[in-house]
Length: 138
Image (cartoon, rainbow, N blue to C red; front, side, top):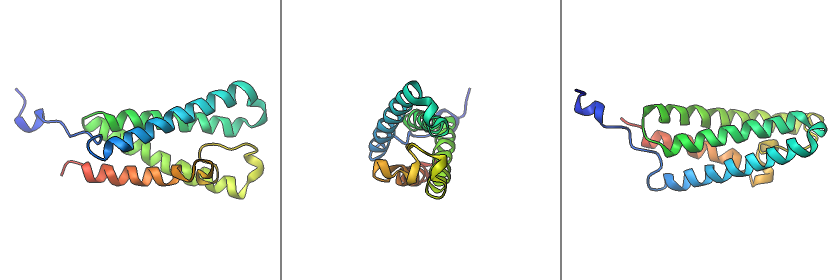
C-alpha cells in the first residue's frame, strides 16, 4: 500500500489563472499547427527551414498544452521541459531571423521574437515557467 503522501498527486497547473495559460497554449497549438500545415502543404519549396520550425513550434505548443492541463510529476517535468525549449527556440530563432533574414524568407511563429503574434511567443514561456514555479510542490 502506498504512503498517503505518495497517493496525492501534484495539483495541476491548470487551476485558477493557470486555466487561462492552458487556453492560450491551446490557441497557439492550434494556430501553429494550422500555419505549419498550410505552409508545408502549399509552399514547402519556398522556405523549408522556416516551415520546419513552424511545425516544431506546433509540436512544442501541443506538448506544453497537454502537460500543463494534466496532473502529476511527469506532466510537471514535461511542461517545464517543453516551455523551456520553447523559450530557447523563441530566443534563437528570433535572433537568427533578425540577423540573418535570408535564412528566413518567410515568417515562423518565433520569427522576430514572435512579432507576427504581438510578441506573445516571447512573453508566454516566461509566464509559463513562472506559473509552474508558483504551482510546484514545495
